[in-house]
Length: 227
Length: 410
Image (cartoon, rainbow over all chains, first blue to last red; front, top):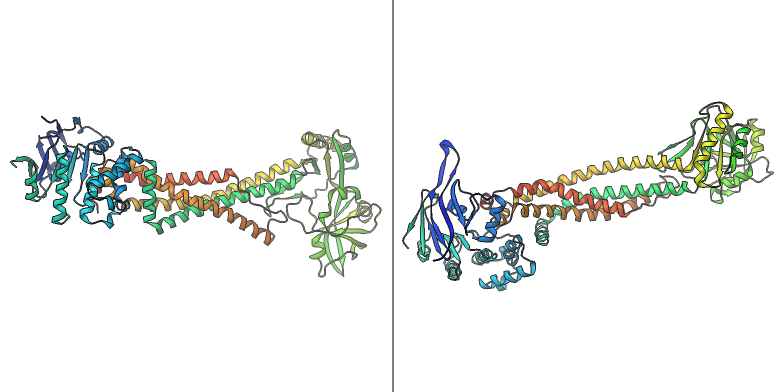
């Protein structure tokens, strides 16, 4: 039995107060184990982003408890959350979100610099990761000089840089063509096969089908769908 | 970590080159103003100190309030107070001479006279003194042409530069004849052009032997005496004794004032010091404006990079990390600006002093701007401080952004 990397106990998230109170996420309890490959689906406005922000430690639940790798993060302050994000979570965004002034190599090593990894070691690791996503020859290019698919692969390398236990991918193929999209999904699956937990938000039923588990979110309620 | 911050800051500055240069220029101008003013202030101190410290064994004894100093004419001038009708007597001079440690006492008599040349009348300041102290007081460099008076000279005068070249329609030359109070004198020497900082102004003076002066005016009013001492360390105590002696002679508490050169130096330096502070305060305004410029640029930069800040926070940057990035950017801009400012300041102060020398401002004192390590250190320190202070608020604003909203911001 694999250990749980994410455990939510009755977490909910509400915005506003009184009449304008919005229940973005209602009492949700799920367990995600190490090595899981999860697809999160649901229409827009369903609470997908809220759920992702919570398990990505970008936001705190209004009530309930959330454990990441055994740590209760619902009580942590901003800086402690930043540390959890840095050490436990790798983000991949729909719009790549690379720093435009830095080249691919520097983008990948940036989060390692926040973790205090030494420069030499960082560059070595960044080169290795960029090699893994097949970008060894484009390391010194800036995001504006790379295609969408290439930028997303840099983002994957960046997400892996601090050796996280969870990869959170928010519509990773949403902005790239089909061919690049399947290549990116292939990389994510490779990562998963190596034992990494991968959680991806998607609209594409074909991508969802490739996951081991599917979580469907509707009106702030999370339910398991049989894959 | 720090190296990465520098890298990030550098990349960002380069990305917004023209804006960064303008911000940098603001700081450079502020630091330039401070550096050059400090250099000129230091130079001024040095020039005045150099001029006066050679006279540190000298005490000037006068009646009344004594010597007044002023900052007029940049170099700080010295002048005798108004003639108050009180004079030193021969007995006073003899008493001074007897004080232990006094090397010698020179007196000079002075009066106002009417000088006539080629039918033109002007009012001049006439001084009578023995030929021996005359030689001690004035050197070769003080004389433009001709020579000083010798023992036994009669009806000969030495005239000031302005008397020779400015006072009359035609210039006066050696051998020229000037009537003073109706009596004829021959010009034996002409004083050289002189700066405002001199302790014995000569430009509007006519110098006579003591004998001629007494015959001419019938006066023997001693307004001042110049005392030299053997030991510089005793100069203050001797000055005190001189005042005591003379005040006793006249039965009056504040009859005479003995002023040492070091006290004159001190008061001039304090005047220059105050002037420097005022100039620095004015220069600081430029710096305040420049730091507002940095703050403005940084705030714009924070706004523009909201999205980047969100990404950095999402991938694990703490608030401190984000703050540091912006503070280092602020420091980088102001230190680079400050470095240019120091260089501009060095050249600028040279230019100002060259300009001053050419225009004749600052009198004969050659003002060499002095860049000290202290002023360079201060300028660097101030630029770092300005960088930190002006980027603190933008950095704080950047740090407290919510990563979710910042990432979403396009």
